[in-house]
Image (cartoon, rainbow, N blue to C red; front, side, top):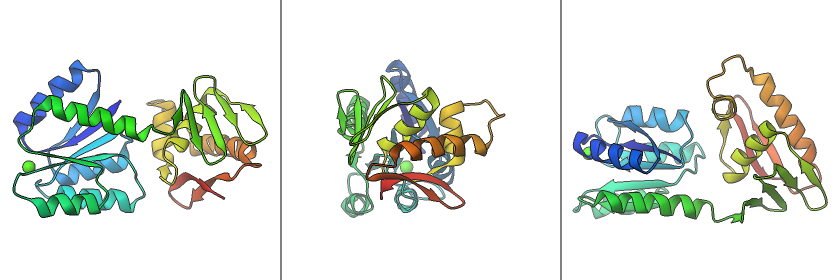
Length: 222
Ligand code: CA
């Protein structure tokens, strides 16, 4: 699990770093809104925690921006006690949950866990489902209404990424990052080959991989 924390309170960052590490959760953190937005745009997180009052760009602005970019990562807002308007605004802008300061850090961890579970509600056992397509990530099997395909490991990883977040646009850079990590000799043509293979397999289904010109790919309904 990978979490982004955008928070300018050093003490809170320190406490959360310790707690998340202890629970085997990767934590990236940014101490101002500008940096936070950059992180949120560049990397793929399971949950993003946004403080509202931040230097440079507020948490609400970050949220607005990432939702505009069709990024559907669950967002947990941290708000002050006396700012009900901010809380309402946050939920309106697409926040999934909020926590009022001060809070017990274990409570934050519980909320983060619950958000990732909620996101994975479309799992059927180890299966991911979208419309008439089911992906079995354990066995790298892709099932459409009348076919079952064996996927290669990379095809499977790409399929998993897309089917977990239908509608979200993944940049080529994010895909390379997730599939190949730091190996740098991978070109964007490699991705196109995998996309091509997956598209062929999805042909008879209601699902397609859309190209978002100049940006990347997303999974959607035909
Ligand atoms: Ca703050």
